[in-house]
Image: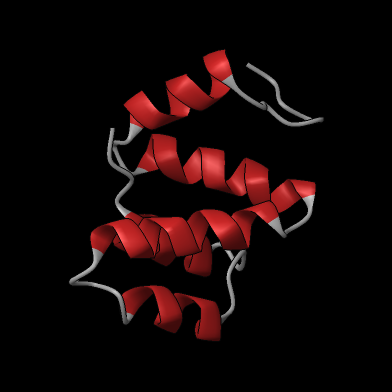
Amino acid sequence: MKLDAQITAAYLYQEHALTVNELQSIQSLEDRTAAAAEMLVDIIMEQPEPVYQCFLDALKSTKQQHIYERLVKEGYTGEYHNI
């Protein structure tokens, strides 16, 4: 299970869930995919609930359904999660 941090971060930025500085920081790690994914998750964990929900939407919209399903079935689904 690998998170594509580049695509996910771009989606989150378009949805105004990441700042340009956060996006650029993640993009700067393009050659270090694990580090980029870790940075993205760290950023998401520090954000309010709506950003987490946007992250879940990003996973579904960017063909990373396998990660979405693991988070929803095995982890935190969020206070406002509706499936």
